[in-house]
Image (tube, rainbow, N blue to C red; front, top):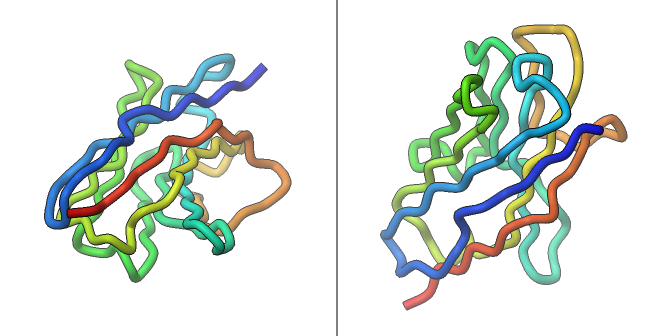
Length: 127
């Protein structure tokens, strides 16, 4: 059974950095693309970033471009989201989702029923 576990959330001041981790088990990481999503209080869950199986395709929401970076380490079955220059509006629960599929260059920051979700990790940006 494919399982996804996020970690690395916390409280950080504006302008600070955090690195989130997404550990995948039950599936080889090189058979899934990975997306990061977030949900702020009172708002709908939105896509933040994704990375394809090959790692050659990455996508970012406009709100995080230039500040966030996604990377994958297949040897560790883990995907990372490096978040820099954090802003209060980045405060949210961050979710990782794994998508088993066969297109090495595909990933999406839009939700679909085929995603396997983690439990989320809280990120709070506050002075």
